[in-house]
Image (cartoon, rainbow, N blue to C red; front, side, top):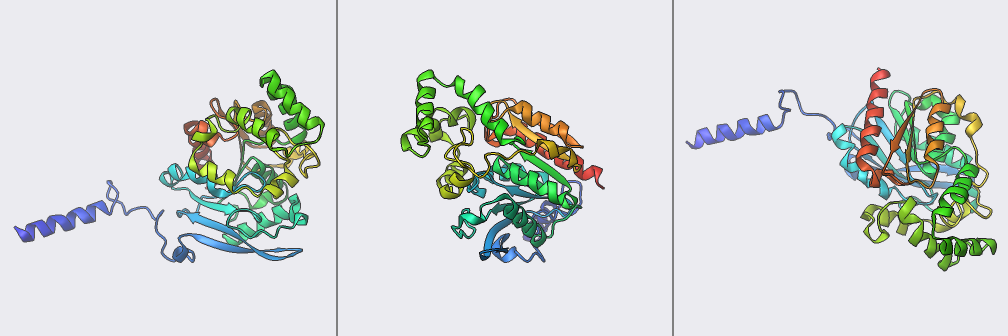
Length: 343
């Protein structure tokens, strides 16, 4: 009886190690021969700048030689943490993906030097990261969300030959259009007294006043950033906001997501006229309640040579949370279709 039990146990273990169709298990979670296996996928990558060499933090999840997605977080100056919801979808789709904190963010070095906070330098940083992670046009998908969408657009305009696919999530190709939409469409939807108070602070240029920021956080963010009461925002989002590099954010974006004001670096960024030079397969993702016009995000998908639009009817700026099923179903479908088409 003991011998029979042992044989049954062995058979069970062998069967469970295989897929139900008898094939060998997927290599998605196999870390053998990966140089980052000791650190659980974490790799620090040196970035050469005019002010010295600094390290940026990356972390790999999974193995798929045909599909590698590099995630560019928003902000500028936010963190990779709010992308943690991808853990609920990408592994079961066997998509290899990389968390990445840009220079000045979270686990990466922070030189605290505003001369480094410009688009061309960030583009070269992404290119350095790509090379260090062994990505190329046979496998490299770049996903940029919000500010990361600006960075992804700029990267594609210079280095699209290195890409297999491009995903621009919740970002329009023009900051002036973003500001116009905030002022002319979203602003008037606020309670009149709230909008009047916001305009009063802006008229004085008092953009960093805690009262101004609190009004926007209380009234604007739950409608257009993430459609939940801020107290109920998922933990990864709370951590990302709490660890924001505010001086970097203020320098490039301005004090809030209610448009771009003051002398922010990105205030005049506009690439609409250049989109037709992007030929790599591109997915634009937009939410109905976004801080930016979803119609402009749909237009982006038509202005590039090979574009698609993913509309999230329940989504805001962080559609990966408030319209999660739509977001990930469409995103994974796009990645898989591009992969099959490129074989």
